[in-house]
Amino acid sequence: MDIFLQQIVNGLVLGSMYALIALGYTMVYGIVNLINFAHGDVMMVGALTAYSVFKLLDHLAPHLPGWLTVVIALVIAMLATGLLNYVIERVAYRPLRNAPKLAPLITAIGMSILLETLAMIIWGRDYKVFPAGLLPSNVINVGGIVITPVQIMILVVTAVLLAGLTWLVNHTKLGRAMRATAENPRVASLMGVNPNFVISSAFVIGAMLAAIAGVMWFANFATANFYMGFTPGLKAFTAAVLGGIGNLSGAMLGGVLLGLIEVLGAGYIGTLTGGVFGSNYQDIFAFIVLILVLTLRPQGLLGERVADRA
Image 1: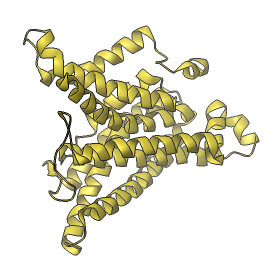
Image 2 (image 1 turned 30 degrees about the horizontal axis):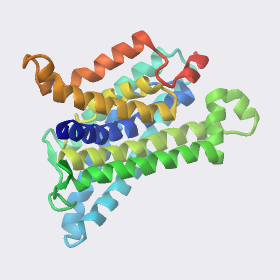
Image 3 (image 1 turned 45 degrees about the horizontal axis):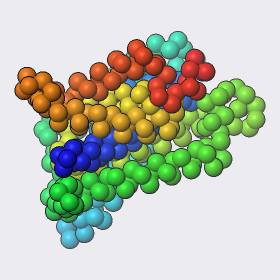
Image 4 (image 1 turned 180 degrees about the vertical axis):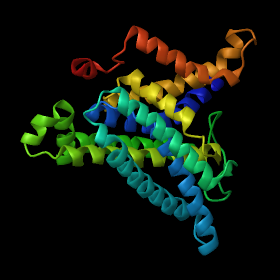
């Protein structure tokens, strides 16, 4: 029973990070119907930017408290990825807004490859290690369930951010503009909404959430490299599809469910298959889920709105 509960905690931590990345996918898709496959690489840029800030602050202010170093790096990473995604939307996607859907899709794949290549040139191929001592590394044991302060931070930060984003979308002028643009950009513009500003805002907010997810991923798994965004990006896309792409609540639900499915699957696949398969096959669960959802319920668990738009 302790092992099962431990896997649940691990799944919630992993799913929280998937949910943050999936929100970027679903915000952009909900407004412009674009699957931004470069979003996972924006997360990677956030993590590696934080790494550069860590190194810089270690040189300029070596006595700065570790938590403050992480906060400064996180803020700079969020600003950098927000600016990056704004430029990507402005240069690569906006000119194709009225083009056939295949054109921006191919552009997004190309942008993903471009970001990975640029990151490899800037930061190199080597794995970057999260600096020791910046965050507490002690293990907390609660009734046999082990959790680290970093994992607690991930759960708390994710819950706060998701609540804040829900409030932004449902109770602010920008949120109303986003919903209006998602329904019909032309009608929204006749009502005084600037669709270009709204779409750029969605890209910037999504990038900032991805940067937070990237830094948390870096802190939790302790390594980062130029290719780290590919697999989490695909899984977060799967989470968005599972929950109902275009639906914020669906992205949250899909991320958490996918994290649980992946961790529980990896934990018990050896027992269920008599040792034929091991936990190293954990990545297949996300794609099994993607195939099942697209086959059985393409609109996702909460995706009625997407079905209406189609």
